[in-house]
Image (cartoon, rainbow, N blue to C red; front, side):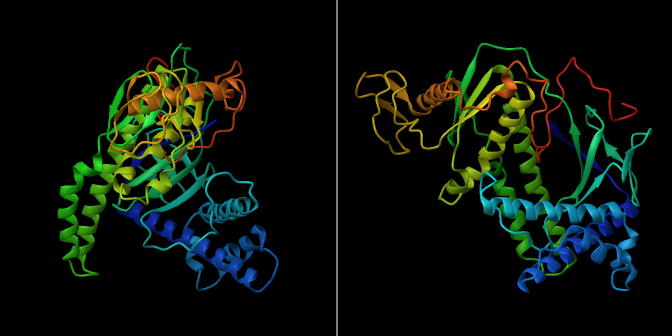
Amino acid sequence: MQLRYNYRAYPDATQRRALASAFGCARVVWNDCLRVRKEAHAAGLPYVTSAELSRLRITQAKRTQERAWLADVSAVVLQQSLRDLDTAYKNFFDSVKGKRQGRKVGPPRYKSKKDTQQSIRLNTNAFSLQDDGTLYVAKVGNLKVKWSRRLPAAPTSLTVTKDSCGRYFLSFVVDTEPDSLPGVETDAGIDLGLSAFAVLSDGRKIDSPRFLRRAEKKLKRLQRELSRKVRGSKNRAKARIKVARQHAKVADRRRDWHHKASTQIVRDNQAVYVEDLAVSGLGRTRLAKSVHDAGWSAFVGMLEYKAALYGRTFTKVDRAFPSSQVCSACGFRDGPKPLHVRQWTCGACGTMHDRDHNAARNVLFEGRRIVAAGRAETLNASWSAGKTRTKVPAQRGEAGSPRKGQPTQAGIPGL
């Protein structure tokens, strides 16, 4: 399986200029190739192949006066930008044909230098780890990196990213085998909510930290200061960075909390069952700010890939399952209830229920039923866990740290 490990980089002024040039060249190649394909489609011509685009918009473009500066960056950066465009088109075509699960994917769009995030992608031909702990990137130099932990294996690709507040990150994709944990006898159903972030079937409640709500006062002040600055001025650029840094701080705290909570749940339970919530729909209601502040989708995604990593069973219960309407004691369906009803008494058996705890228990029972029926993806929890090459995509977020007592040696010299 593949994992992604993120590290903070600290380039100097010369390296920042080289990275800015690489970001711009990759963006230009993307836009030029996308424009060629769109014009060919509008004219009724066949789909332009990657080989033809590479010859026209990279190799020959470097010999022209208008695009001569493409030769100032590594050719790997330009080729990977074209490959990313091919991937975007493939995802779009698969979505249209129904081969891709999940939400519909739109066609590729043009990139702008004003986008909140700039990035380039490199393969092993364009970067290498040095003995002094720095990272060499072709035509950029040796980058100073804050190594927070070791890489479990040699990386296969690298993505260099600059976020909206000017921070640089290095994202390594690493091929590794599942690290199965010792088996336990417990399993858990999870009901996600807003008053309590998560309620487990054993009665435990995880309070919602509400990072955005706690930072709103400072964010409002910074955004008022930003609105008063003259557009295009240097003071406005400084104020914008302050707002971006505050938002990044909120996102970092939420991500760190999600990692810790998800890891603890996966380690404590052999099987984890969670309801498949319609987050995109809830994000368009009056509860949108609280829903996005909770970050349910990111949390469920972490549970899923960590279950695959540690050899646990993970199952999503369909969102149409009436977890809040069924009595977990006798199975009687008592009908829908408004959100302000937090406790209710079963009309059949007279059991007093906490709404969230009852829903978590129902999710647990339904998850067990799905697994028993053989409709859950439990390959990583079977006897072959760690022996088969289970296809798990690299996560966009940062992967968890290795467990204590099992140090890894590959990848970073000097640590």
